[in-house]
Length: 319
Ligand code: MTE
Image 1: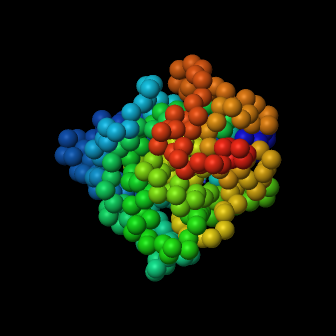
Image 2 (image 1 turned 90 degrees about the vertical axis):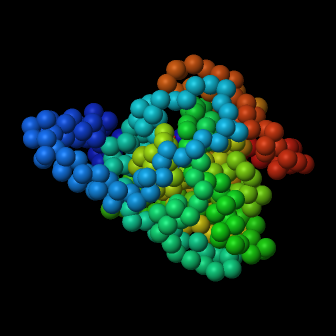
Image 3 (image 1 turned 120 degrees about the horizontal axis):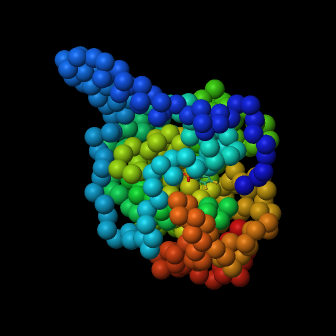
């Protein structure tokens, strides 16, 4: 979004460890006897389950109401092309993001609610009905992906939180911990990352709390343990690694708006007719295929969301 040279703490992709780790593990297993392998495997399964007590909930059943007009983006492409400024300003943050510790993880629900609370994300995930949805994902930078997200509708979380009628907006915050996310040492950025929606937007059926992708819990670079997906808006609305959800009366002043309000606004609805001040939004580059396709109004979700913006068409709502 903003162009900046690489800082020393941003680890280049070639130094990524996960694959090397798996290769190494295979070598170790080959070198051990069958009994030892069995007990080692059991230990690892146990360790994985301990690390993520929700792992057994995946893959969740696909909800076929959400259809795509193009193939899914391969997981390997998606997992190595991310925006997560807490771990660096370029797309190759996947290795750096392995510093994220998504378990244990507390979610605070506060503001205009019947009863403010703090709960463990794993308990929340277990209490919610998980489903898989195939969504388009369009970044304001004019690239796009198609992703099988797993999660639950944000409306379900709102019903659970019981906001008071005075609540006008839902505001969400990412964690703030520069030790876990060295990008948060960058003083220029207004940490923590903040995003928000009107209550009508947040309770639209498309607004989705995401806890998994590609049939398993979220990878760290995708914003584990819980992020948002609002597919009719530019990707920066889809906040990652959420720790706080507040119900408020004032329109949230989101992260990108605070940095450059002339380029990024609260609404951020995908609209091919309104260019970004520095580039066109008329078409998008599809990651994985490098094909270009015309961008659709509301990213193709017009039928589901256009009614939210009736009478507001003349306002500069798409920024
Ligand atoms: N959330 C946090 N906390 N930090 C970020 O830098 N980037 C946003 C959004 N959510 C971002 C974030 C932007 S600009 C986009 S396009 C999407 O996450 C990228 O999600 P992806 O990496 O899963 O494609």
